Image: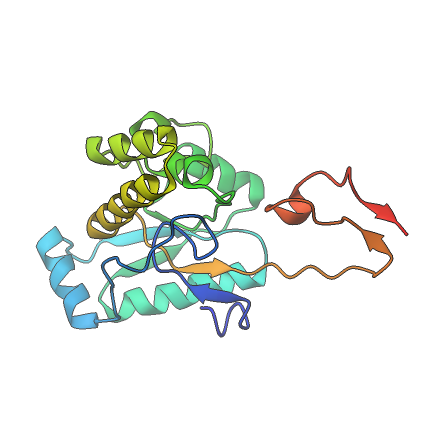
Length: 212
């Protein structure tokens, strides 16, 4: 996906915290590609060849190619996939209403796990009506406790230990599949000043930008 669909502008994800976020750790469970293991886990889960609906992101050919690559990989493990084509409004509605079996999404993490990570996994954020919260319906009291404690803790070393536990637990239970981290390159004229003023790049206000 990173090399073909994203032409190198992405890196394989290591878990729920991307490499650029505070307290990211590589000391977490790893999942190398093992088709035989996947087949065994599917059998243990009771999968009997039912067709699953895959909802790609409708943001262009890159996301379409990503979904096709995923479908090919799942097919090798014996999973039958039906691609569900939508426009942006349709994707939002289906994700809002949890009308999918498998779905693509991506999120901004805003530099700190209390701001951009917790909302995707805590029980309090299980609510229909938004595609950018805990739409998988994952609930674990321990994860709730860790994110709550991590947000309140002031000591960076203690926060690191708390969030390491959260990463390790999430990568043990795997409520979602973390595929890749996207690199959004920004091209702009050298006469533009302060175009990028925060971690969310061009999605932030251009209030500080000027032409020099």
